[in-house]
Image 1 (cartoon, rainbow, N blue to C red):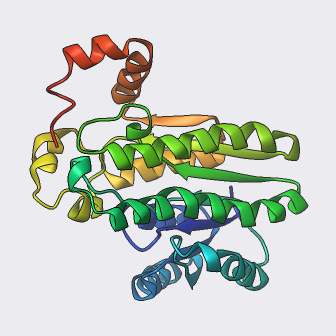
Image 2: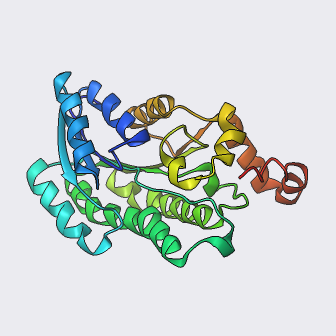
Length: 259
């Protein structure tokens, strides 16, 4: 992987930040992308203080109308993109009747339309370079939906559908497309997703650490494959659900309703 240019959306905190730090340690140039420019500059300084290479650009994935201009501007300054990690996203865990319409729209703009649009404007550069790797951070929620997460799960189902189609579409151009499907990760994600803290309390002992998930993403960049499911037992559970949905809902109904 040494010497690759890796773009990361949502790089200002949580998993995105951890991926950026670990990627830079591998000798790659990291392009930090997020809305919070102050946080990105802190991460850039941390990377450079340890001898790494990083560039910071403000990018709002949800501002779809401006993404083409911003991405082209970044490309002019950076000059290359070997890996795009679509990490930006958020969720809100509420019953459908309690979710505000503006929040629904925002979730789809950031989690789905923004991700697709960023990829749309990056792909031509990868085709010109005759190679690249697109990694979409999806979720186990994209495979096994649960109560109080209907809208969020819908966005992640959309991400997986997009990823699977694009993988076949770009294969002739030597561009890999991968999905990472983690279960709950101990990050700031839940500050908004679970304001009451009840879900975090119920699943805390099973929560993944961002450092461990980032390590798996680094391995995926080194050896591309179709998808990574974390933790493995949860990935196996999602597979069983797809095969026997009625049975799993009957057996594990209470476990799936911990939000």
